[in-house]
Image (cartoon, rainbow, N blue to C red; front, side):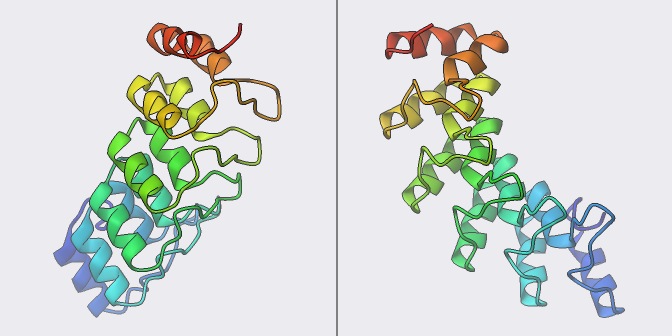
Length: 186
């Protein structure tokens, strides 16, 4: 909990008293997952300096970079990448950090991940791509960026659902209008 809430002094004290930096909770989340989720760069840096692995997976297989990307913590994402985290590391569901950032509408993180080699049409195990995630969440600015980088508006997941289906299902009129203007069929 100290890592999640950014209490570096508490984390340092606990580690000095023998706390394991990679000990996970029941759901497999380790302190570095928690600090990344909360955007606490100093805590992440400290944990890495004490041996925490930047690609350690939780029960869901997601690494700290997924947690930081999901919540728009660009500095943490950049640090994790600088320490060796892969921008296309997949969780058990095949989702990568760009899926997480797109779902959350975090354009700055999406742009950074793309600049570091993340593919805009990478699919999870269900075939859903980042544009599906952004469309589901109603994040027009992310959808527009992904299209500008080559994402197809007609790409279907394994179930045949397109970004237009995702935006329509969730009532995101602006995204629906944009996708139709870019050639999406209904």
